[in-house]
Image 1 (cartoon, rainbow, N blue to C red):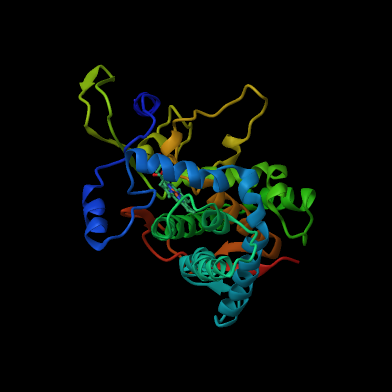
Image 2: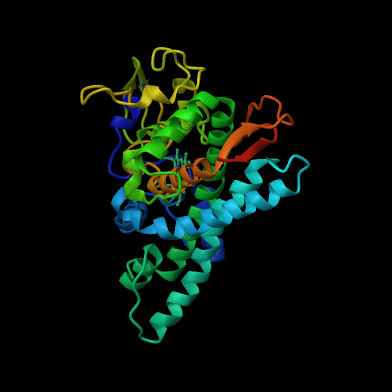
Length: 346
Ligand code: HEM
């Protein structure tokens, strides 16, 4: 049924009624960003923004910047664990990963001002998404600010909670962690800093992220407002109906994923070209032309961080950690702090 709704969408799908966001922004004389825009305005922004961040090869250029932040992340782990009695535990890893996700965004804001001043002085500037947006002048400065704010809203917690869950699952499943580590060592080595082009050589690390998002989809549900009358599951759904699509439920459905409660990243590995996992069973980044525009950035940040964490450390559950259950606070978050031991790899 989820597939039926999503496959029927038009050229500018609507997720939910965003009139209150729109009204507030109008009142303040502010622009809307991609999350809150609708119709033609959304189409225009989406077509501009998608050009630089939607494909894996577009985001590959950010590997260097992401790795700089990962170097800081690893230094921070060394500092934090040295403050604990056992010299290895880091309590509440989400604080750590939140800072990791956030750091990139702070660079973004400072960079915006620097690029604008270079442009004002008539200098030539080369760079990533922001430079492109400012140089191409396809969006106004207000629209660029609105989009940067909304990307901060959409990108920081989602990425950090997912990294926290992935760390928790790897710590709870040492046998999976060992297989992932061996894949890294065999294809990349113990010390080589990974870049985006290395990730396709490591199918298991990609499978770990998919399986983490299946078990803990940080956005547990999604929505669509129907843009025409639809028959779904034998019911007539009139145009303009808000539908809630709960991919948390489909992710745990045994028909889609046998032994659905278990962490089994291997289920995502294709055995041959014809072998496919059900595409609509787990859609943590949404679907179609309104799906998550930051998917490739999030994947890059998470894959590169996990690879380097595993190259540096064996991750084990700390005796301070009780089983952690998920809670919904809008996002699906860890209900308790995740505490893990980062032991140096020999
Ligand atoms: C693990 C990390 C992430 C998850 C699970 C996630 C998930 C989602 C989901 C489910 C949607 C709704 C898609 C739909 O309606 O079909 C969405 C939309 C969106 N996400 Fe993400 N997201 C993540 C990270 C990011 C990052 C890092 C950014 C920014 C760099 C971002 C920016 C956005 C934006 C702007 C939208 C609205 C797109 C539109 O309406 O056109 N997300 N995300």
